[in-house]
Image (cartoon, rainbow, N blue to C red):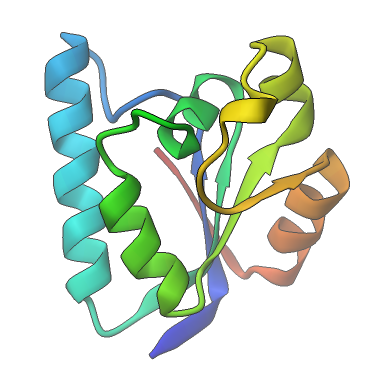
Length: 114
């Protein structure tokens, strides 16, 4: 079931602090478990280094694809992608502006920042 009142914000290329490999393992497991959950978010917004999770070579593309198939909107910040020179490498989701991210947040009653 889609939970229309929750948005997840991802600002880093992984989860938590520590070695990059550990951060990527953690976000992979988190997204995998989120996909198995009964309630899933309406959107996941990626900004700053978080946009690296939706580009070619990301180790979590499979998990994100599964969530997108269930109706979760994946929104990658266009300013961040352009700044990092990654706009042409996006593999999943949409390239959205801050307006798209703000709209998702304003429609949500709960925002989770990882």
